[in-house]
Length: 87
Image 1: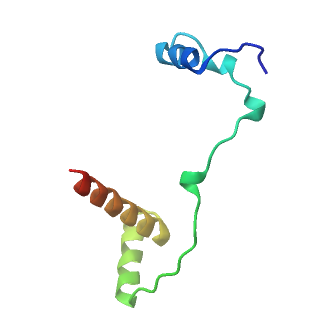
Image 2 (image 1 turned 180 degrees about the horizontal axis):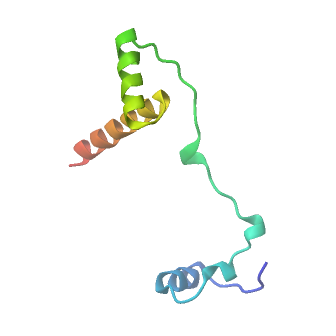
């Protein structure tokens, strides 16, 4: 840990200028990464067989798993809807 102390405004200024390493002002032993954005919740969704088969074909085509296809497509749709509403 460093003994250097400075205000948040000074820290921001140093960071924005990019000429000095701001890590010298950080106590990395106490650093915490928030996972609030990455918190997961399990849900069960029933799909017709033809949908599962189509998802599996798409997953094989792009080389990822079925769940990754579902998550990616839902996230893209949610982003599109949010953009459409804010326009």
